[in-house]
Length: 305
Image 1 (tube, rainbow, N blue to C red):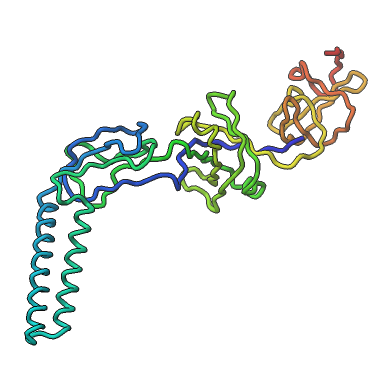
Image 2: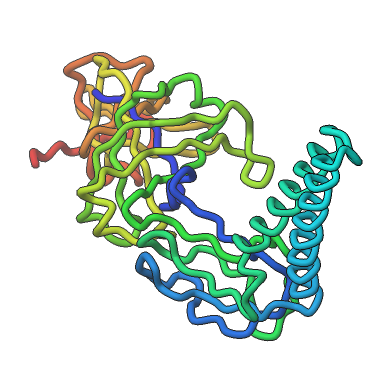
């Protein structure tokens, strides 16, 4: 028999393949050309930010500061040649110019010289988060958009805390979409967290989805993960033989056509068989049909199936 651990979860973007796009300068959202869940191409326009007057003023101030620092450096050099200033004065003027130029360069990288900023997609991917609405006021460095690579997917599943020690980082697993059991993806655990998720009370685990399957799967799909543990030898009965009541699982065995109720411990399932342990031995006859009407000591009639 094969022992299994079953867990449920959903397909998510691989965390290290998600890119966060931020707003470079404060302003107002002018246009938004995308929506959550949309596939986008590298270089595609995503949104437009109209820069605020304050951002434009910062650019003008930085430009003026560079021009002033340049004039001061020229003046210090001239005075140094006339022996009216020291080398320290020239070095300070050079430093001021470099600092002012660095500030201006940073603003240029943020497109502060333009009346608007256009955000482009850096990769082919899927928009998983959108924090922009037309007319919304945004600030510099606000997180605007999350884009996940559509070909790098993981299954995030929740494992019962008592089962965590039975699993290892390389334990094999079969991933199956809940609503499409014809798809089976073979993989292994890549990460098992070391704490309980406070919202689910389960321990999260990540399972990489191979690229060959990732392109045919959709983010957010609910899945079931079947982890295969070590094989073991056990007595087994057809799953139709097992019943349960308030005291636990039980089966009926036959001896001289008399039914005997025996409580057992139920193990893992393999196909149509269920592993059991208890006061039972190999070769005993087990009732698999009509057992729900039997009682201890009841006389039965045996029929071969």
